[in-house]
Length: 434
Image 1 (spheres, one colour):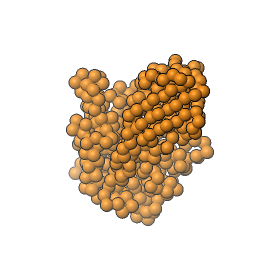
Image 2 (cartoon, helix red, strand yellow):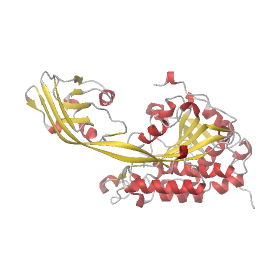
Image 3 (cartoon, rainbow, N blue to C red):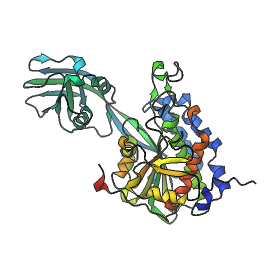
Image 4 (cartoon, rainbow, N blue to C red):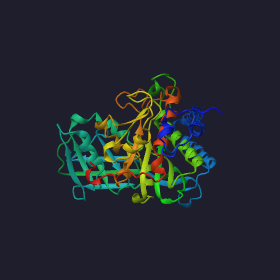
């Protein structure tokens, strides 16, 4: 049978994996087959809490079962369930110094069914004044664990529409209430009466394990998120078809999930991993990374040697084909290890070219990275010019399937010495994290 050479990668793979073997396992046909299923219209955009997300979960579970992965920590199946609490405001009345605030000038964030607060309660009045940087101030107060009445200068009133679109969901909701009121600058006497509908729903990551031979208690994680934005209005999908309202999320992040499935099949068939490998498809990344946060709490971070989070690898990077970047490249030597294993090939891993966007802290690697794990995201997304990002036009036809296949192969081979136990990346210095 004719050998297919993988761009010179095999010569430096550490354990000399035959190109014929990897090309049989990670090939464009298989990549396309999985990607088509995950990004198909019948998945309805894989939004959390919709039938589409559970259908996608079932498909990933079936793939893990066919590959022959074990479940995580002896679980009955591959689903790693956790609860999410959702709050929907049903009533809000605020009076400040004798004036009733117009409904369009206020918004509340609370996970309490009933709220009754006044100047005599345990609540603090704070301000966002004209000239302040609204974003940082908003998140400081929004993420507070205290009861707050936030008086916002009217110059920021247009921001209230974005605030109304925020999902009020949390895995571990607080007991406090934060109310933003636009217009007033002082509040000597005030009252806040609010009612909220509180519901609890289940979501699940999909997690499979390939147990290590000689170092079973040392873990390497390969991950991607399988949720996306769901279905919008036809007008929102106007980028390429005014009638299309399904946000298929082919690149974001069916591409990363496809890679996780194929890497699981690859390492299972290689059958030479000395360290245990955890393959996980996260849910609720688009809602705030809740799936990865829950997953991270199920592990001892000291036992996690490395994490490869795969996010949007379906398009060419700014450097073209056979290239990708690694977020937080300077925070461990993992990138150097990967590139050394690709020595002699045409593939190149670059440092993140978009440091101002803080991508290292924005994806599913962040929780473990903050605990010292060399946890990095690998991506090709041109964050300054990714035309289909968070649009209904993010469909499989916009992806370069051949290039995506080569990226997955490069990840498989470049990670080989970490999986085998030969290389151990340096830990992230948590004292230097922002």
